[in-house]
Image (cartoon, rainbow, N blue to C red; front, top):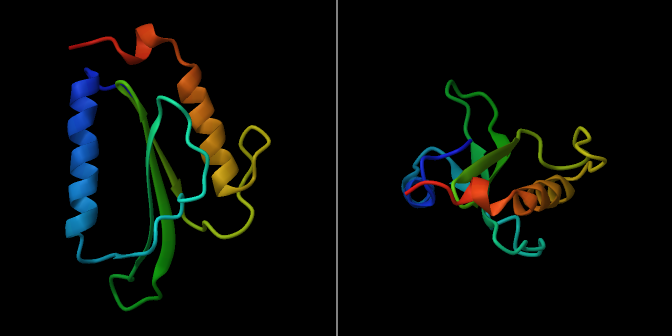
Length: 117
């Protein structure tokens, strides 16, 4: 997704952090990305959480990863984060898929990611 400007995406990332800290339905776990490689110029937020079923059904474990570079935003969602994932660019692990996408964001031209106010 392209935001109007990098500053607009700054606000969106601040809202993601605030939502995580105030969420009362989900149970958040330790950050899943502490040992993942960082990619220069790409910011990442990764949340592992368990959400209880609305009607007493079993809780589900999920993982959400948000990536940004300039005004470009990418959200990756894994409904079953443990184990092998459907392949993306030859990657079948959550970490591998995230690192692949970080590399793709890093490769975008500056004229695309930094355009806007």
